[in-house]
Image (cartoon, rainbow, N blue to C red; front, side, top):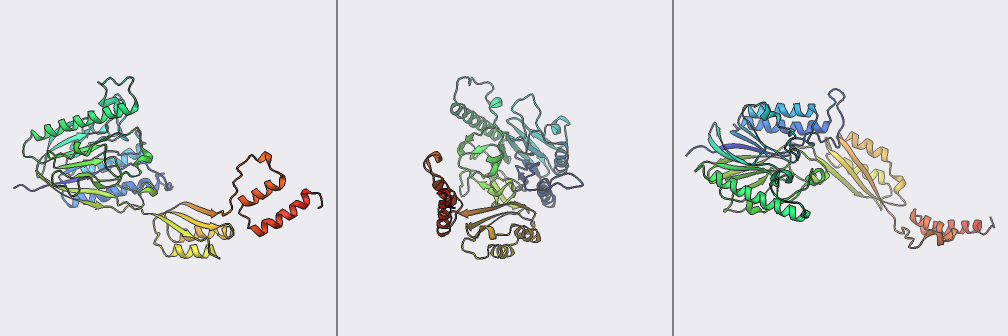
Length: 412
């Protein structure tokens, strides 16, 4: 029996994400862009050390469809490294391709220049590829743009829901045809590489940077035993949709390579390493050293010294290199006692990478609710509601209203 093929599966690199970073004064490149590139470098080193036979990139190289030349150059260097080791399949994601066929994708240059060992998979097709450990059959399923997949369909007058249903049906038919074509190659390991949503998948932060409107296909459309492994991109949360099943291949989202926002704070980031044979796929998720995101929450409403309490909390966490947000609960009485400058200095001393926000949630027990137009209120009633909205304690409020009443009556 031949040795299983060693396959690298990754997706959703999104080079160009610059939130929560700072620009390098020498290169002009955001520190967050550097984070994403370093994650790719970790992956390339792993592939080299473990003798990769095939690399499958399941889409979304950049944040935008028109990345700047610096981002394209940095990505190209990593593509060169990967293609120098083994064949590289690059499936187009929604961030890679333009809705119109006439416009070039952000990675089309590799096929235009006929870069050796690189297949830019911009259409639905099946190919047999030769690797150092034997042949493999790969089916490609790029992101299903309506303008492309439904170009021969009559959609005029259809509702959005009807169009989405037709698109899902069309994609399901295409996926079935790809599986049939792959099966015709006989007892050769085969995998499907795609960039789209599958029903039942747990969503991540991809919704926040989504380009275009999404459509889902049923899990049954890809959990097909005619495939040995299904390598997916598009959803940022790593997951295996057929976990525990013996009647279907692993249907795996590798997840994104780096955290994008606090919605991914607890998510592991990395890539998948697959040992593939016909009828079997042993795979593992390999985590990378993604930038940590940390939320510090502190309830300081009862604290007599909220600054001291928060500084102690900061010292109790390992925040080195982290992107941090601080959310504190305060009372109206101690809100002004929080020294924000001291908090920011303590975070800098802790070695954080970036402070995303310092949010103060102040308890207003007696917050005013007017309920009627202010034009119908007396001056005293307006003042009382203003004091309520400011969270002024009841005793102090009574004193101020008594003084104001004398002014309103003309006695003072």
